[in-house]
Amino acid sequence: MVRTKICGITRPEQVGPICELGASALGVVFYDPSPRGVSVETAQAIRKAMPAYTTLVGLFVDQPIDQINQIAEQVQLDAIQFHGDQSLIECRAANRPWYRALRVAPDQSVEALVAPWVGQGQGILLDTYVKGVPGGTGAAFNWQQVPAQRDWHLILAGGLTPDNVGQAVQQTHPWAVDVSGGVESSPGLKDLDKVRAFLQGVTQ
Image (tube, rainbow, N blue to C red; front, side):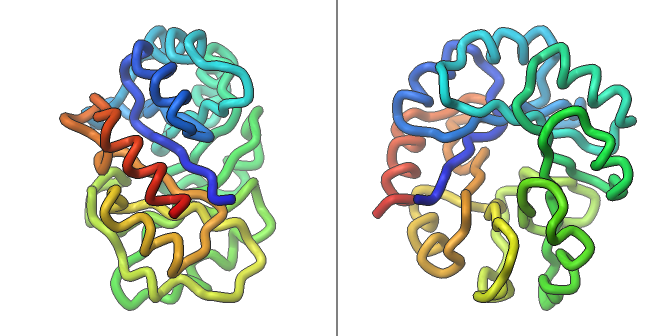
C-alpha cells in the first residue's frame, strides 16, 4: 500500500474532510516565505482537528534545531520533514522521528545524492530541484532517475497531480507520495475533488 501525505494544510476545517477521503498524513509548513506557511497557533488547531491514526508532519527549512524541537513539542508533531541544508548531526538531534527531503536536478545521480542518508531517519523524500526554491515548486523531475533497486523508503514528491500520480506510482514504486499544489484551488486551500481524484490515482 502506498501512503499519501497532503502537505501545506493551512485550514483546520479542511482536516476532517481530507482525512475522511483517506490521507495517511497531513503536512504543515513552518517556513515564512511559503504561501502555505502557518503559525504555531494555526498548526495547533490543525493538530486538534486530526482524527486518530493520522500523522501530522512539520516541514522546516534550515531553522535552528532547538527552534524546530520547540515547535514540534508545542504542536505535538508526529514527525519532522527536513528541507534545506541541515546536516545529519542536526537531523539526529530532532526530538521526533524525521526524514530528509532531497532535491533532484536533471541528470543527477540519485544513488549518489541519497547515499549519505540511507539508513538514517524514516525515509528519503525526493523533490524537484529548482534554484532558490526549497520545495513546493509544482515541477516534476525525471522519475527514470529513481533507482529501481534500493534499500530505503522512497517518499516521492514534486509536481504530482491527480493526472500523473498513477504513472508515478507504477514507475517508481514509492513507500509514499507527497502532494501540495497539485490538489489545490489556491495556495493552502485544498480542493477536495482533486484530493479525492489524487487518492484514487494512487490506488488505481
